[in-house]
Length: 365
Ligand code: ADP
Image 1 (tube, rainbow, N blue to C red):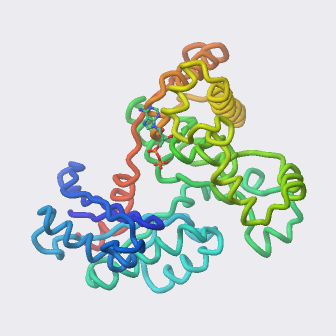
Image 2: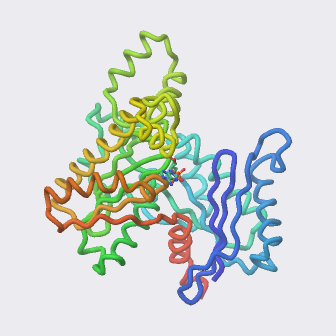
Image 3: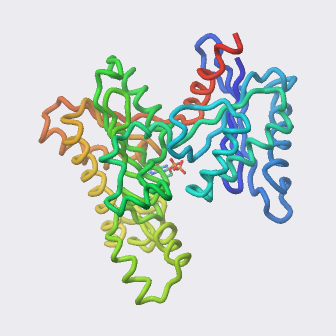
């Protein structure tokens, strides 16, 4: 069965075409349409981007006829409290994705643009939405509520949602295979360390807490995001620097994290290089980054009541033995050799393809 996975970003569309027949996870074509909406770009908008994606698939020989594609899976960032599972897309699902654009203004509108573009050009092919937030909908209320007046939750659905759900879910499944134990017998901590970073506590295959929150700003220190901070510090900066809401948002999301502390780069490879050559700011950025990871792992170890494995993934997680070893050393001290440390490459697109397949398999057989 041929499954097309589409991930629409604000100015790009990534796609992978899988053939999931015979238990093989073959990629038969993949591509990236960039600079959507920029002057002189080939794609004026996402709908045109989908048209280019179609020619790209045909040119690369992924399929000879578009009708060979059985189903399309779309990554959608926010599914609010409604979508606990992947959804076959219909008018009602589209209406809700549009509604949750309030909670993810940078992501849901472009995810939707891809869905609408596909409905235009692949009108006979079913489409499925896979939500980044869905995996975390199992988090209990004592973990997802903020200690604010409750009316903000009632009025605005203001709460922790968590992100990177598809990646954490994929890593948990891989860990279960590697450990040779079913997911429902495992306690796991999964660390997705990329440009954005988040850690999830997974009990019996279910997310019970995660470090990102109402938005992807909460939690760990990231490339350009500050992660956890005393909110009063935000008021203090705004007052003393005369910053608007938008300007402050820019500081917290784009000027902080590894970049803000090092003053050099948000790229972990660059931080590592400067640290090795003795740069003190890069060294502080590295130490803060690792300290936060330890702090969350410690908290989740306690919440889970012990852990079978701590797993690392993402561009940083998959390529930083220094971080992995630092965590290993602490784990050995507290649990002996009982807790495994695993480095597992993530594959969000493959997970989306598998989840998409599950939604339509009965119908298409
Ligand atoms: P995204 O979250 O956008 O999917 P990635 O998972 O690709 O991002 O991670 C990007 C981060 O991974 C960057 O900070 C980059 O510096 C880091 N990274 C990529 N390759 C390496 C490497 N070989 N060693 C250390 N860090 C790396």
